[in-house]
Amino acid sequence: MQFPSHLCTAIVFLASSIIATAQSDTAHHRAVYNAINAKVDSLKKVTATYKDEPTIFTLTGWLEGGEVKKIVAKCGDDGDGITEYYLEGEKPLFIFNTYSKGSASKAGARVEERLYFEDGSIFKWLTTEKPTPVLHGEDYQATTEMHTKNCAAFIAALKNGKGAGAAKTAAKQTDGVFLGIEEGDYAHWNMRTVDGTEVSYFILKPDTSVDKVLENPKAFTGKKCRVTWKKTTENIPEAGGKMEIEQVLSVEWLGKK
Image 1 (tube, rainbow, N blue to C red):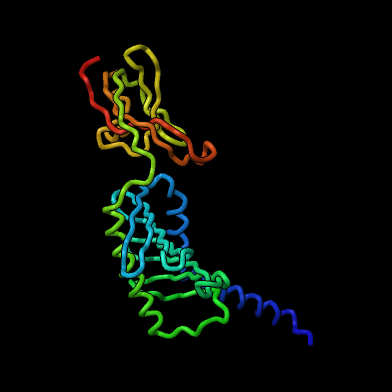
Image 2 (image 1 turned 90 degrees about the vertical axis):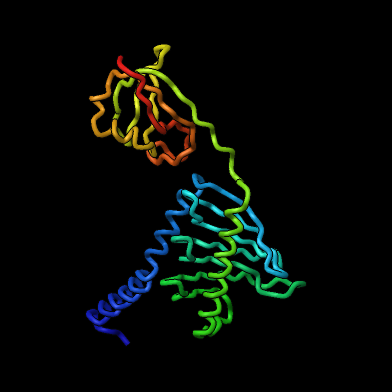
């Protein structure tokens, strides 16, 4: 049977609308997931363990400003169960869970689960398990409570955990004369050091002492200053990705020229 062209168009439009609607309810979750993973290498990385008899979880967490953004928990019971928590306000927003279905002696197919939270509860649960299980309200409630409880316990353990990343680079200081702010993809602090060398520092996350200069750099040009700066590894897309840079943290004015 051949359908009229206008009916086929309507069917395609309806299908597209259904797909768009199905994706829109998780658009925020995907945006947060992508944002966290895009900057994960610049976050503070810590490790810890958490014991919930008889299960032992090996934890890795990523923090920003003291707030846990992502957790990877490996379950010691089955060896290959891995749960990734993506958090908002240190509450579960999206969980990606993988495990092997089978017995202790014979591993089965790998199962993936995607759990989406809203207002503290799971509202969408996607799984690759076959046959596809029939999930009821009590399943959603029990799983919400389990992950919410685990997440809170994992956060507490990680905040008492140990750093797993590279040691922080100590801040340094340079004295010289302020030459001005160079504008481009990123602002740069230009100055001439006491030995006559011209240097330039990225301006990314300085304190208010630098913010004041950004408002009116000409008012400070030619003045003697002491800049506190440090080397960091940052994602600079305009330069092709991650690179080591020197960024200014603060400035102290030393007096007249």
